[in-house]
Amino acid sequence: MRIVFVNLHGNEFLVKTLNKYIFKQSVAIKHKYLLDYLLSRDDVEVCSYINKRGLSLSYTTRNPLLQSFRFLEHRITMSKNGIPNKKVKVLKNESDIRHDDIVVIYEFFRTQFDFSQRPDAFIALSQLHFLVDKAKLMEKLDPDLIYNESDMQKHFIAFNDYFGWFKKQYLVIPFVYGERFKVIKPFAERQNKAVSVGTITYPYYIKKHYNTTCLQPARKQVFDNAKDLVPWIDCFNSDYMSGVDPKNVNNSVSKFRKMINRMHDKFFTGHQKKYYSFDMVEKFNDYKMCIVGEEITGLPGIGFVEGMASGCAYIGQTVGYYEDYGMKEGVHYIGYDGTLDDLKAKISYYQQPEHQQELEAIAKAGCEFVRTHFNGRAAAESLLNNLIEAQRRWLADHPQ
Figure 1 (spheres, rainbow, N blue to C red):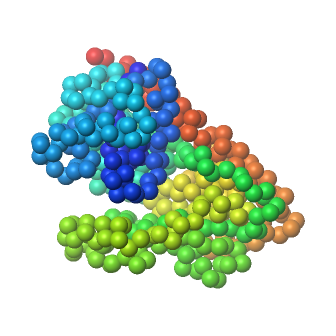
Figure 2: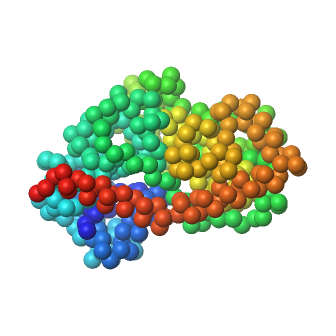
Figure 3: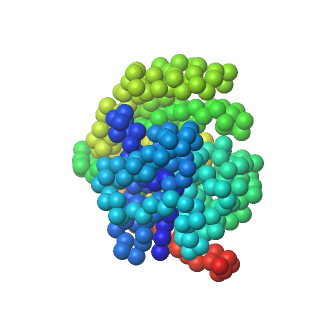
């Protein structure tokens, strides 16, 4: 079987891209586990269709001379990621995509939609880093399956406003913790309180639906009340707008000016340098409980899996996100209603000596659950099996 990615070398969710190497940027390769698993399978051929906008260093140009370097960039990127070029078959033309291929598109990258016509193949689309500005491109592509770390059909209140045309399978896959996240310190030796982590960001598009531009209000309420919450919570959240020129999010500023501002923030001002200066594994291991406030659009933060894998009892809102993964409140995690009062009440309850055994049991059950179901191999195998089954049904309905 063949799995076809589009511009694999430019997909920072699967590989460390060349621009990350050049600018020495840190990167979270969130779906590397999937590529690693596919490359390990003898019965799977991994392909990369490199389209006419495949030069990741210059996606904005269609200049043929510049784009002629896209195949060289692919070879260099694969080599730097330790992937032998023979392990990935390069497809140079749309016609090289076969009817029985599984084509995987990542919504985040606009250039992956650059087809002259829809490929005659089963198409699965990842909504990792959920956005709405690609809705029209998605509709034109007409994917056969969408997968994401949360069921946006259920949890994003405006899903139908943008994606109401989609009536096919929406698959929920788990977040996957990095191998470095593990239990280092015994539970009894940890601080008997919660640690709160995660970045606070402000995408403008959500204001229309939520009357705020804050994507993680649960994190912001902890951040804004950090001093008062010290008996229960140590706050290590980072507000992305701290120290950022407001012009970066001012819609009246040109796109070029915004780009210059963002580049300055990223490369010259050490933006979020403090947040990335501490070891997250050690931080989780210092505490018995952890909080990673959810996104208002319906998505947990990946940090909840990392905290649980590190032995923390996770505290999350009881809105159904975690049940979608098969978790149970009071067994695998501590639930609260989203208010600070309830958050303090729940932490206070578990801080009491008579409830320490119950707290440790939740932390242990949660840790075992994520280490069993949210490890890279288990998640990748489950996703591949789901894609194969969905493609089997598609092939039956679309004979060549």
